[in-house]
Amino acid sequence: MISVKNQFAGDNLEIEFSGEPIDTRKITVPILNDVNFKPVIDYLIQVIPKNTELQSSFEDFSEEVNVEKLGLIKETIEEIYEQFNLSLENLEVQVKDEDQIKKLEENEPEDDDLPF
Image (cartoon, rainbow, N blue to C red):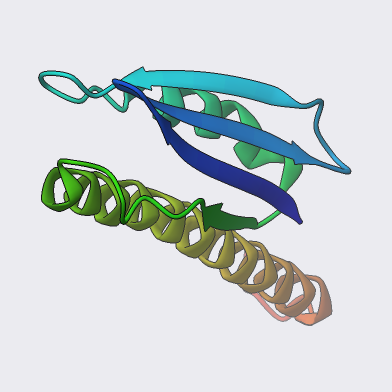
């Protein structure tokens, strides 16, 4: 399991990824104006081959001035994490299906009664 700690710090969202299959990595997402999650998504693409789900947590931000905006940012980043985990599940199902197809193909008898 990859632990993802999220914390709003000033005009940034500080994200720390840590856990067994990866080295600890910190990503800072500026949130003052438009929020660009591309650095997070790029990192998650690199992590997909580890085939390890994310478990995220957020530090409390209810005392912040712009709670509504921070809430929207939190919802968005949680959706990104959720979709990442779903993609891992889909990859797992796809690999199992491919393995089953290979087994079926290997067990098919060859038909030697063909006229040619």
